[in-house]
Figure 1: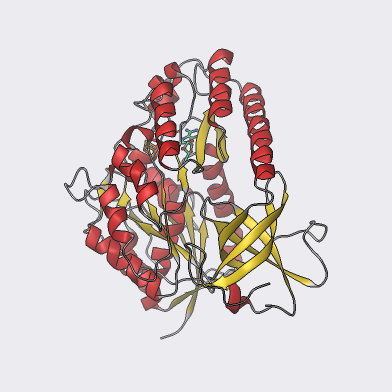
Figure 2 (figure 1 turned 30 degrees about the horizontal axis):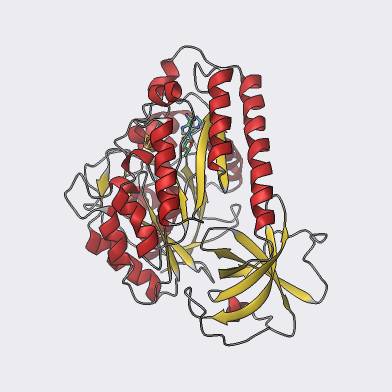
Amino acid sequence: MKSKLLHISTIGCQMNVYDANQIAGVLAPLGYTGTDAIETADMVIVNTCTIREKAEQKAFSLLGRLAKIKIANPSLIVAVGGCVAQQEGEAIIKRMPHVDMVFGTHAIFRLPEMVRRIESTRCRIVDVRLSETIDVDDPVTGPLTDGQVSAFVTIMRGCDNYCTYCVVPHVRGRESSRHPDRILEEVRTRVAQGVREVTLLGQNVNSYGNKEGLCSFAELLTRVNTIGGLHRIRFTTSHPKDLSDDLMRTFGRLEKLCNHIHLPVQSGDDGILKRMNRKYTRSAYLEKIAGLRAVSPDIAITSDFIVGFPGETDRQFQATLDLIESVRYDGLFAFMYSDRPSAPSAAFSGKIAEPVKKERLQALLNLQEGITREKHQAMVGRTLRVLVEGPSRGLKPDDPAIAASQIQWSGRSSSNHIIHFAVPEDFLAKKELLTGAFADIMIEGAYAHSLWGRLINGPMNTAQGKGETTIAA
Ligand code: 5AD
Ligand code: SF4
């Protein structure tokens, strides 16, 4: 079979990264192999996101570029997938003559058939059908990239929470959980391929299985924890309202579960939380944080925030800053509110002016930057075990840890901190020896966005305890 080049451009969340991998997986049997070069590809798939206005703009600007590329290469197949495709459907095909195919969030498994039809007849296709359950679309695992040590595994799809600002329930459909046996099978496949860590994905993993009467999420974690050869488990995202005591206790009970939780709060004000339809109060959220810290005192906690939700007053924004001060997050993502066409809050009154949103965003980020800096500083002198992900990317030549005789690496701690460390060139310069191994790193330098350290123990083959040292520095 003739080999054809496929470029997938992924914008947005981890779910999209997972979907892109599945797209690559389902198209491989048709002879498509991945390429980074957009200009020489036979097919380009823009895997879009519509969660915020900016993400959607990015997708349309890439589609604009593709119109020009297609003039130079008329046989190029241009496809649009993901949430923008789901939302806009037919309108994209009508507006953009260079687009051959629009496929929604539930159509990935129908792709081979659609692509075959386009290849043979050059027809144009739109498929944005949504199905009720996820298991009818039997997922396949796509290829891993060279040296990939961690993989995503989707455990559920869609969302039933209907936060008023959010487009997800409208573009990803109803919440539907995969059967635990299928999930375990996929994790085992990844482990057999060499992966050390998995991140279980869902819009709200805490409600996993509830609707279908499958096992609880805590039970699922317990089962995944027994898989031999798997060293670490992460999950995202958690809705605070569904974070049960049982689930909190897994942080003390399951040795493979990483010591980090992403628990988006969005706002620190009860009035705003109510109008966001988040279904918890500030004090209920703080109780969950206290519960987590009671089980695991040094658990890393991160969150998402929206600033400038319609009607947000200065006092309400201040309540968000106060919450950040009291929780002292290890990191956060903050976004300026943007109207999404199908989200109810688009019709709310009291829209906040852009400059005010910008100001609030900056104030929030400044506050967190100070907290992160202090927390990073407190880590200096501590030794953390990292899973080595590979040579550090994107380091600037004047970064403090770069010395001429040393190779730079990076790894991730259980708390999800990225730690750069130096290895003497004559000690271990071969990428394949260190990537995927565990190593103990003593933190020596703390900066606003990164941590630096020295390899003091490793590489080794275990995420737990003291580990068996094969090479000591
Ligand atoms: N405007 C701004 N941010 C949003 N998010 C979701 N919808 C919107 C919106 N309309 C943010 C939330 C969510 C994250 C993935 O994106 O913080 O947790
Ligand atoms: Fe959107 Fe809320 Fe569902 Fe998260 S829980 S995907 S914010 S509706």
